[in-house]
Length: 111
Image (spheres, rainbow, N blue to C red):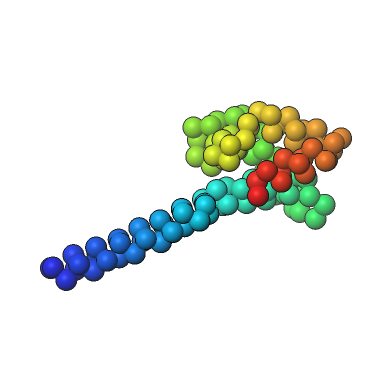
């Protein structure tokens, strides 16, 4: 039983060491994942690539649906975790077809 406990401690120590080095480098993989989710939805909703209508519709529903910041992985929840204002981003996205340069500016903040 001591061997199993020792192995568990070593594994936990390794994970902590890896997380510590990741944090010290300023890399936040969770933030990158959320940014990718948001970017994919925007590309699906507004991109020039041919997408199935249901993909475009789902992306637009997610982007423009009710703001529910307490619901994990909702548009509002994702944007708040990216330090973005969900209501302001919705307005920007609604105006995208008229002013695409504003959307490009906002997307650059996700990097």
